[in-house]
Amino acid sequence: MRPEAVAPAARRREDAESLLGAALGLDVFRFLSDAVEDRLRARPRFLASIAPQVLASLREELLRRAAGVLQEVEPELDGLRVWFGAEPEIAGEPGPALDKVLTPRADAAARGLLKMFGFPGDECRDEDDDGTLDLHAEHEVAFVASSALLWSWRHMLAVDAARFEAQDGEAAASDASLELRLHLPEALAPRD
Image (cartoon, helix red, strand yellow):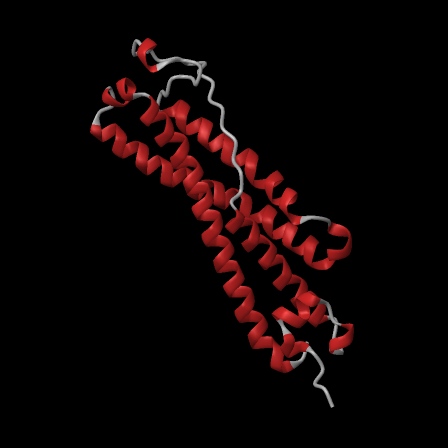
């Protein structure tokens, strides 16, 4: 890598990681929060039966689980970043890879949260809720990544691809990929 490109490469990687981390955190927290809030809005009787201190605990657990999902997926996402950065032409579309890592964990976190706090199953109507804890309650949840998360994931992979390409040596602009030209032009050989 050209010496002039080292500092910009580090800065752009840091910026992309920050954007990705923020998007991941927001999406997972939004998903878990929606899973709880939508059910509480649809079940006024159930909501009325929950003590304020339990709601405070629910809020804290929601934050804890969102952070746990992020911590759990980080090593796999790092591995995917290396794969997509090293083999961009054969790696394929990055969105499904992100979904494969993130969706099962976010869904499990939401179901676990709902079960932990005794939410009635989705098939149970609020007016039929007699307050009995249903140990076998079923909750339909389905995490879907937002467009902001998908963009930040693709952006991170593009920055990684540019860094990998720059590490291979100085390239003429005409031979460089779009990722290198756009995300790390400092690595390109100067024009005569």
